[in-house]
Length: 364
Image 1 (cartoon, helix red, strand yellow):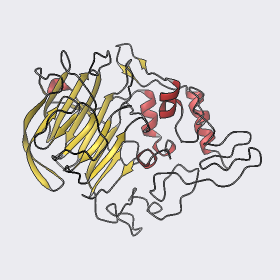
Image 2 (cartoon, rainbow, N blue to C red):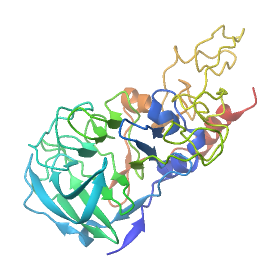
Image 3 (cartoon, rainbow, N blue to C red):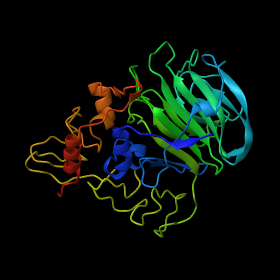
């Protein structure tokens, strides 16, 4: 069985390489790409974060396909080795056609809910949405080295959508959980995970971490990886705060809860989910809106809307064009298709991107 790095389209590659340049103050996870710890001691970190998880993908042909999956169905699977989740060891899971896994038994739920849910069993939601694998879609699972992988490969929306989506869940031998996304956009609406619930929960209304929970969150990107794992109760950077204490980047001594958060450097120094607040007025535009970069003659964040394909972060949320959820939703941006017909994120014009990044980073 071969495991290989996930090949990323140009826009996704830029997002990962420029993680520090694409922070967003719209919500906590988009700003720092880090969340937690929850009440059970779990944290998440995505591949847009410096030091985040590497992009991996295992071909579903190397796994065991389950061709008998129907719409709104689930199958019990015995794990090759016990897996510990929220301190409890499990030797089996139930894989659901609607993009999630449960440690225990449950009925299939096609409609995603905000976490925590009323379900009693612990659960992992890599992409909880109403999928219908009836037909040619492959839901498969098996081992990749010492890890166990569940793959939803080529699943369409329930109701007959034409788009085929690809994502995987990895139970790693080190106790962490990975959600991996390969094809996240197609000709269907909504796409890019607009209606998805993504996260983990202990069950019974207990601890949970929600990464994505509706249209207000930024869209998913091809090549994105999200890691969930127990936090490390050690102070690696010597700033007096551990990861379990809420240090969102325990490799940087200048980042910790309570630290002074400078505006405009695209770093969430105080781990509050935003890149500072600019309160200095600019006489040229007479605007003191939070996040406004105070460029002469330009409106503040509270007034501006994203404009597609201009290479400018118009709404000051740190995301440009196709990487901005507001642009995707309001402007109707859709991904291009490659020569093989596989939908992937469109590459943005290099000159426009360079201009947009220069605008964010220029001296103030």
